Length: 234
Image 1 (tube, rainbow, N blue to C red):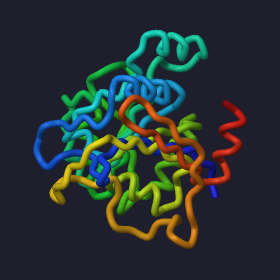
Image 2: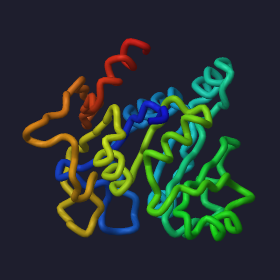
Image 3: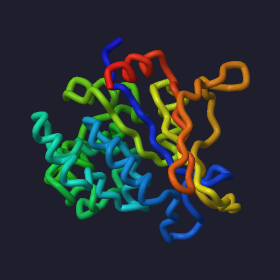
Image 4: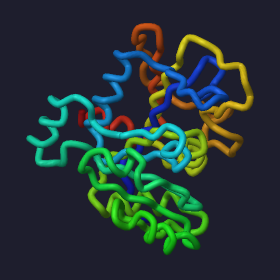
């Protein structure tokens, strides 16, 4: 089996497990102090991955926001912002989205095989389009990223992507932030969808740390033996 990066999943959700509301209005599930923590985690990674739906719905820039952290990355001899990565089955992406236009970081799109030619015609000027298989194989994606120099990968969602990484047992660490309110609307997206997860009542995930950050709570879970090695290397 080929090498893959250390994979850290990062997510904020409501008490009842939703990633957003049922409307087009963005739901803020965190606070300024936690946004700064996420910025620091981003700065520690080589690449950030989100699903195509997140690109369409949230229009994220996926950049390190703090200049001092960008400068520190440059001083280490790496680009000031991590590589941006997305995964898509149908390549319904806007080349003018902030994912592609914000910043100078490399952008990579892993696309399902039947739509690769279309994706390259649409996005070839703004991103590297890679055949991800049919359906897109996340293990293959992570192995390809490792070969491109990505040793630490941050996955920021959404729910379908989190589900796929977890059910494929590709996640080494989970940062789960819980906001102090309920959404209460099943039309909204959840943290994960149905699936066969490696952690269940018979095999509990290891809770490595709990931290209160203002009015939210960060839960850090160790999901693989690689977690302890990564902690020692920090």
